[in-house]
Image (cartoon, rainbow, N blue to C red; front, side):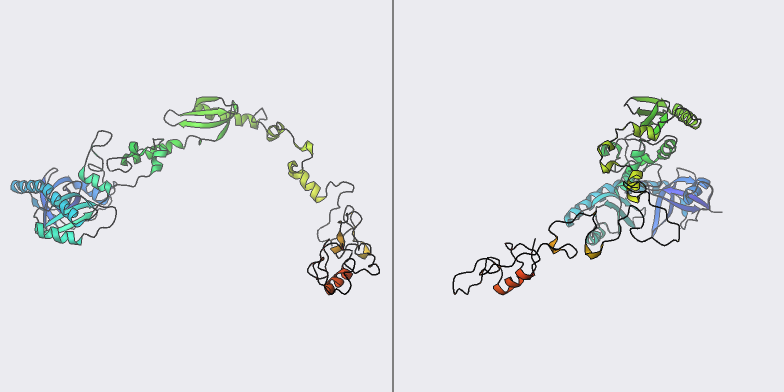
Length: 436
């Protein structure tokens, strides 16, 4: 039965192959099938461990059978030839970088890797945008006389490929044992109460460190035992607000209404809150009631400000449940017809005949223009020998009087039709409507 073998190549590149031999051990060089040729790698896992890694499941899931297989164990001369190819790769990188500058491309050449049989040369690069490197590929193919593959990678993949030492003093996780680079957000640092300074939480790649995800779940589970910051609790000292929490020491910092702060353990806070709740159920002194809290606020309704009336009193005044100068409005049974206006006490009453206003409603002054208002006293007509707009002009003058702003004919009509309007006021364009 074929076994699954994990083989690693340059950098952190790994792949899985099948092998018919049971004699292949870990840290042994083998020759495997590659794209259009052969490649040489190092065995890093075999058997059940390699199967779990290949399937990505730690509970014994069925692993997919790799399509390629191990050809044979590598001979010593093949291993030496592979080392010679590794020594030639810095020269390849230097030539490629010169070609990139020659073509003016905005890309950074990170690494180069020869295939064991020199049938393919893979060049890794990083770039902020897409790069048109077709001319570069043709030039590199003419230079190295082989098939060229340009592969764009991200900055995190570049760090994993090149390797390095992290802030902890150990080799980078992504270049040693971390198989998958998961996304890391700033929320992970906030949940763990870490410094948000990018220089302190960033790795060699310039991105957030991958190790921020290792303990995040432990912080999330520990935070569930604590009340959120800003919440108000009722303890033995009254109403206190949670200022900060220390999840590892299981302590809270509380502040009461007077501004006094104290640090207390989580177990003690839970006991105080439970005791205060039990005492409130028995009817003992517990949290101050809402009426007591509002009673300490000075009442501003003594000044008669309508805006400070409470909702009940405001609704009483609107609904007629407590009206001044009248009995309460009788309740109407469901389905009964609505009584006419003015029958119940305290209503407005019917409008008096003649189009006049009710006596309890003051009349608006100067209501000559209102159709329902009373007409003003009749103005006496013009004196003998006097026109409607003042004394007559000179003898034989046919010039109309411009003092009122209208022509003579329209002015006569406006003077006769104006209901009590002031003759000294200006008519509105000769339309016969006066302005009070």
